[in-house]
Image (cartoon, rainbow, N blue to C red; front, side):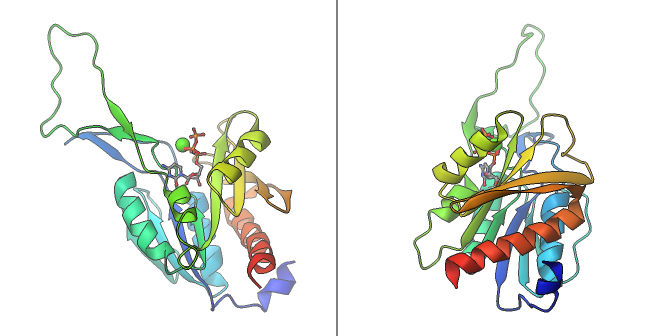
Length: 228
Ligand code: CTP
Ligand code: CA
């Protein structure tokens, strides 16, 4: 498979990828976020760029260097990520939603630091749902809609939940992660189960950079079947 693609340049393709966590402010000094390192998304961006694709990488707050020949756009919140991702996705043939987008954000961001009070031992935060970026890109009208790839981080019933998300979000391909044992977030290694309309396949546990390359090969094969 590798040899088959080494010759094949992806110079005709523009790919937009989201990566890392989002950060949802509560007040000027606090936020809600998650442990996503961004490594998988950055590795996918690097793999596409190596194969000659034009790559936009919409990155949440992460501590990673920008891969060579990748156009990186840094964002903080889900709302910000959605705006940038939608703009780039409309001009892309492929969109990969790898970011761990915070599902909820504070209904109101406090203008000043939230103070601890003497009498209250409890604090209630009101959260509202963030837009589903990958689903909104998959819902774009046909002439703007790229081939859409999602990820699914699951701790149980991995295949079932991933296939539900594939359908519900109208994705072309979903890559499922089993995150039940803490072996993915912040780790160098990962294993992926791929599901699409026409089938499924497992990419065995390996280094995220190697895995990303394998994923890009598979993705292009499925993309070519759909669009060529
Ligand atoms: N995703 C997104 N925007 C969101 C939430 C998720 O684009 N607001 C994308 C992720 O980037 C990923 C896919 O949706 O590609 C699945 O994310 P996941 O968190 O597993 O799914 P959710 O739909 O948020 O469901 P849940 O967290 O309840 O499992
Ligand atoms: Ca989620």
